[in-house]
Image (tube, rainbow, N blue to C red; front, side, top):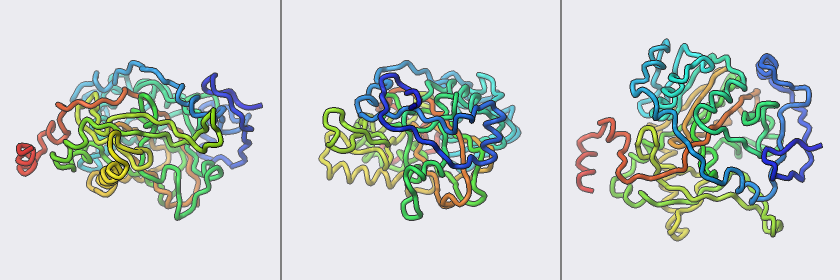
Length: 384
């Protein structure tokens, strides 16, 4: 009998899989301690949508979203004063908080954490004792939990997805030359009507060598562009497509179809008010209103700005029981597969959906707002 669908309108025609991989010991210990029932198998697999119109219909309506970071104390006193140490990993992106347990944060501290993520793009917490249930509850503070009908879930905790590369490799074989999956620059759920905000990945099992994850700052990527070039893309929109392909119900033999949404190339974060370049090579397909050749040239350049400027990136080495919380509205990320599944890796992830992307031409850049502009930048802005 096939598992129940996440959305009642989704009818699965595929046979349920019976996974035989051995769950990493640290992951099993964590899940059993947290009361996760593994007796019916792991992970839980919801019914998968086959047709593209079913996926379009999931959450295909405007939903209210109030970002908790807009309620936060700008100085973040409740959060930062409680930490043993606050370590900024690079100048532009990435902060590690030492001495706090995510599960114990107050609502005020959660709001301030949301603002810290909005400012620093990704925030790390090591040595976390957090259950999938607590992870979901924290995610609900940041917005509506995304329930993905294509990915495995933690049994009994809908919306907490399983990140287990060895399992994913059984479905989409990977190798050194083509690691696939998350080993490419991307941001999550761009095909949603209201795409992802904060994602929380907790890794209970990590390889001893390799397996780092990289993030790049969309604030800084936008600031790398000349003021004249910014005028070319400000206010323009692009088509963003889903990671997973589906079939056309009326013409299933036509080949794979993707969910496509139109969003701004440059958006504004509702909490910081700063402009951000919002593109990624994996899922930004084309710029609306331009010929394909024109769109390809511009997008190719924008992808390179994001991916090739190492000074706007952070590379994080995981340790067991570490959580990373990042904002998909202002980052792209890339999971290194250099360990090539030679050692186990396992984690659980919760993604909170945010607002419908918007552009405000009067919004400042991060460097403008923080007074970081050099003399040459100020002169260049004045000319444009």
